[in-house]
Amino acid sequence: AQTVTQSQPEMSVQEAETVTLSCTYDTSESDYYLFWYKQPPSRQMILVIRQEAYKQQNATENRFSVNFQKAAKSFSLKISDSQLGDAAMYFCAYRSAYENFGNEKLTFGTGTRLTIIP
Amino acid sequence: DSGVTQTPKHLITATGQRVTLRCSPRSGDLSVYWYQQSLDQGLQFLIQYYNGEERAKGNILERFSAQQFPDLHSELNLSSLELGDSALYFCASSVATSRGTGYTFGSGTRLTVV
Image (cartoon, rainbow over all chains, first blue to last red):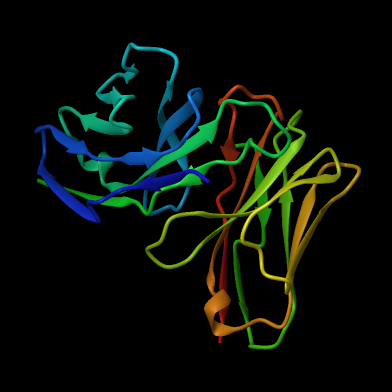
């Protein structure tokens, strides 16, 4: 079974600075997807960014980018120019790419609470 | 509005009681997933339904059950409730072969057992 580990329960960053959230995962599969989700105080789960394992290029979405190291099974999220609205819980998640029966679920890490300091 | 509707948003009930949580998936999505998020924890996968049939099961307690109806809405039934069942319950939907895209989450149901 796959596992996802987020070793930083809490992080803080000054507004306008850059912060990196860590995520490692364990899998024996070679094809999969990785996600970062944001959960603000509203509790809504919001997709931040998605990475396909067979793509070498790191995904980017505006101020959000990832550092995907497949061999190291590491998937960190970098937030540039941090804004007050970035304050939230951030969850890393894994999904198998093999379209076998019942493999579509997301496996989540325990989350990192990000605080933005004005 | 994400397109996934969960009702009710909040629920307070006593130990030993039974409750039903409801989820309407986004239009066109055939898969429904249920997750449990206890306080300050990650989301734990409970169960998945696809087009009316159970497709995958996680660490779902025997006191919990779910189903998906012909109109594709899903219900999660929690019985003999215990204090430890207090949590946020999320529903998400997707097309089955989404190739890793298209998961849409509802806003969750906050269950408090007293």
